Image (cartoon, rainbow, N blue to C red; front, side, top):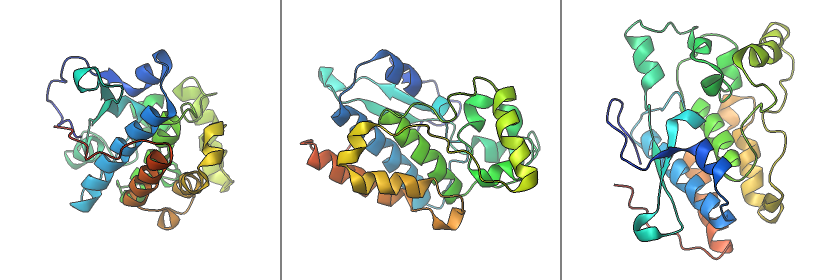
Length: 222
């Protein structure tokens, strides 16, 4: 599941966005990719670690083994922001300088000021990435760059106003998966303590895969 920082990416890996934009994927493949991603984040949390910078740019996809339709998901940049903060290369309130590709996945509490990585902030980002896997598109897609995103988000910080929903639309197929849709909504709750755990999302995705006629294999992510 996890690609260590500094390790060369295996040949054939492409970014999640590239795969979603360039390939026609069945809902079963999308659900399986989302489950692999959620399982990787859950595994980190199980050992007391947080990713801290989950974003589309840190997720990579490899072709399935032996020409299989299912893809293999890899997660990169684990602990990168936390490490930069620990070494003093990035101050706690400078994470917005990392650009829109990262900050569009930030949890609301991170926009309020200095914020250490947490399971809850990971779950917010994970919920957005799962929704993206299932066809929702990237969060705040209308904001093409960091300037537009900042203009939308920063004024709300001073006035404690309700934030715009990061996902403009959920895929129509989710109407047939109400439990999964409800859990994705819970991932995007404003209060960090009210968000579910990544393991709950793994379970919900496993049920959705089973309902769609898929096989919940024990992912060999090597």
